[in-house]
Amino acid sequence: MPPHHEPPLENPKKFPVWAMGLANAPTGFVYGFISTAMGIMLASRGVSVAKIGAISALAFSPTFWAWLFAPILDVRFTKRFYALILAVLAAVLLAGAVVSMGDLSRFAILLTASSVAATLYSNAVAGWAPDVLADEEFDTMSGWFNVANLGAAGVFSIIAVTLMHRLPATTAAAFLALLVLAPALLLLWFPAPRQPEGTLAANFSAMRRDLFRVLRGSRIWLGLAIFLSPIAFALTNIFSSLGDEFHVPERWVTNLNGLGVAGVCSIGCLLAIPACRRWPRRNVFVLAAVGAAIFAAFLALTPHTLGCYAVGVLGYNFFQGFNYTAFVALALEITGPGNALSGTMMAMLTASMNVPIAALIWLDSRVHDRWGLQSMLWFDCLSAVVTAVVLLGFVIPRMERWVARREGHTA
Image (spheres, rainbow, N blue to C red):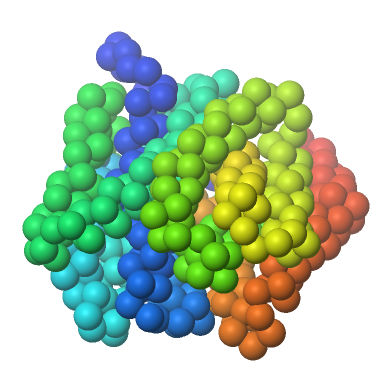
């Protein structure tokens, strides 16, 4: 039995689709701090790549387990209410992490808690979108959603590094918290999300029933088979701590992983919009990882210079933008309009994609620590290429035939 869907909301209030995508910026800001600013600041304090990788993997881990708390997004209060509360929590907890960098254990705990709030914030915004957007708007929403995620991450990282170098920790933390909160004000502009009906207990009961119905469907399993595969962009969370090995000064590491990554990721996100309209979104998702693998191989084969580092980092992140836009568009397609479980479904699908990312961050950093930089780059490259061959040549064709048989039998 298919998941319960309700007709899309009819709301006369008009708003640009790109604005709803950009409302995801608080999440991008927190992730940018984890992926880039943290690595630069901890490396400058003499923390090893392996330890930075372990903290990064821990801080990113909520992206695959925070969905366990996501059902609350679909009960009692609106997604707007939850999103605003979560934005405040993400900002406050990030500020707490900034002032705790001298204590790595406390820093890791506070940063992970901020990541939990940021992840659920993103789930609330993404789960809101199917209620107010048409299917043909999903690709545009996805592109700008990931500009706010990846592009904003790069901008925030360079701001964070600059502030933490030049200001006292408490002052820098306050400014960064305000920056995280500011984009959440866009939420006040959008059409109101659905108001969940019934009691809390009744809604949780209904969600459990809908969840089992969703999992008995076929298309969600096609999505999970793709998203759970080890096609990940783990190096984006490690590049910022590799400056010394590539003989790159910190200011160049900061600029390249900040504004440089923000620019190329945003371009990749937006160019993926027409690509997702022309080709199957799942194919764009997979092939983008192959593009990134080419740049990982480039870094493994070329001299360790500023120029090569710049080409590798920017090329790798360009294809990350492609990959993330294809993911969100495909996840929105699977969730569908008017889905009463949209927040939870988006959280589950996002979690499935982030499992291999967190795993490969940990594995890449361990390979680096044991066998060195070259081995890590080749490991990251080959994991993406081999997975792409298996998915495109075996898994996706067979899953598509299985879905067609299931849907034909249901019809």
